[in-house]
Image (cartoon, rainbow, N blue to C red; front, side):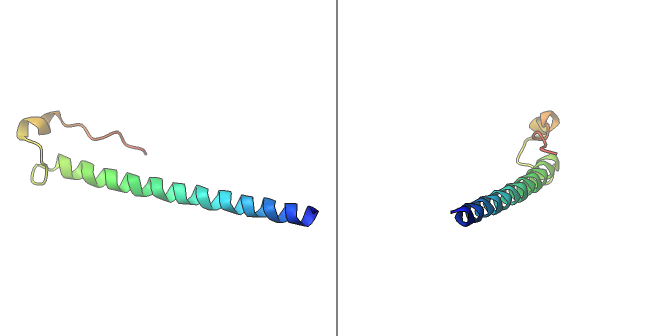
Length: 64
């Protein structure tokens, strides 16, 4: 009984670590995408915004 509880505990701890790592890498991926989109919107050559809108554009809130 104690052995199975230790195994279950170890399994749950490993699952917790792996889920935490997956979330951290997902957040980093989101940050990279957000930075890319912000730079595209700021660049008058690539931006879908009009010249007037570009003057008012502020980058999306950064997650840094």
